[in-house]
Length: 310
Image (cartoon, rainbow, N blue to C red; front, side):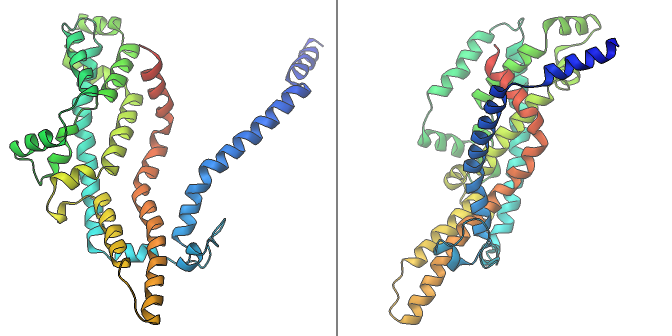
């Protein structure tokens, strides 16, 4: 009898009032509209990249592809540099992220320890660089003086440490790796280095995933450093090659046509270039879209710990 009474009470508690239902309905509608507003541009880029060029330029592509074809992708991959630059970007991104992690995480861990003397001065030294920089010309002279011009390391070493990312990681270590844990390990003869590699790092999967995402996206989307420091086209990253393709095509379109056939061919080329833009967006976004789902579960935890606490 008591069991039935408890079930009745639970059912009464679960039953929601009219105001809650109205609120949830309105909230669902609002969030659905926000989802459509955010997701539709990406969906439109996808369907435009596989639609007929004439349909895209004519504004007939709205919800579904019109005249399915892959001419935009075909035109992009017919360029011999695209595949090699894609491989270059993967190499630059992987090596860059490894160097970033090797510099950022130990620095953040050291500055998070209470017993580390001089950490206030060192932290201020890092923070000053967030507000003041040497500029392009002095940086170029430093890179040239170090013999890094036209090498992969010119894209990696100058920005091997992001102060913002280091501060986020430092806050994570400070909030999650307590001094009591180190003192307990120290009693067993554990050194700082051993503690960092065997205890702190295994417990810092969330912030490591965040650093991989931040640094990885930064390296993958970067093209300005390659534009400044690289002169060999065989070493160009994907973003710079895609930019070159668009500029070359736009230059070709500036030519004037005198005959009707030439004008028709020029118009067709313009339509194809319009589709190529969306194909380039998809090609350059695929690696990031593949990476993000694997670290999504760590994203909120790592960012919130680094931004709210400390």
